[in-house]
Every structure is written in structure tokens, then in C-alpha cells.
Length: 73
Image 1 (cartoon, rainbow, N blue to C red):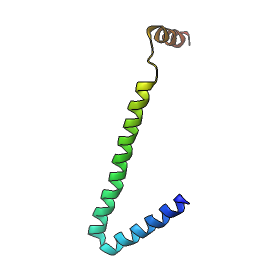
Image 2 (image 1 turned 30 degrees about the vertical axis):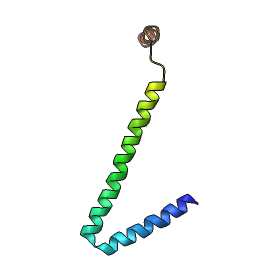
Image 3 (image 1 turned 180 degrees about the vertical axis):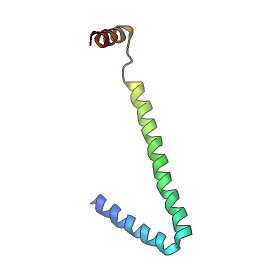
Image 4 (image 1 turned 90 degrees about the vertical axis):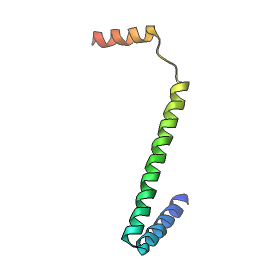
């Protein structure tokens, strides 16, 4: 349901941007696309920071064991 609504709204927005002309519509479309990309990157960074705080850190024993396994291979 939400996907269909999103497709319809995107098509309507694209039609409106085409009616505005290539210069104005292109600038607005550029702003929308890059705004979404930057927002997505910000959210990914935030998720990474939150998960890295929760996940346990490697201690000396785990590092030594991992190094041993790498040397053994």
C-alpha cells in the first residue's frame, strides 16, 4: 500500500517538476535527491555509532587468539 502511494506521489512530483521547466525543476530535483542521500548517510553514521557503543570490544585474549588463527593458516 505504502509503495503504491510512494510511486504515485513520485510520479506526480516528477510531472510537476517537468512543468516548472528544466532549470527550476532540475535544481529542485537535484536538491531533493542529494538531500535524501545526505540524510541517508547521516542515519547510517548514527546507526553505526549506536551499534559500536553496544557491541563488546575485543580484549587482549581475543586479539591474541585471532592473531594465532591467522598465523596458523
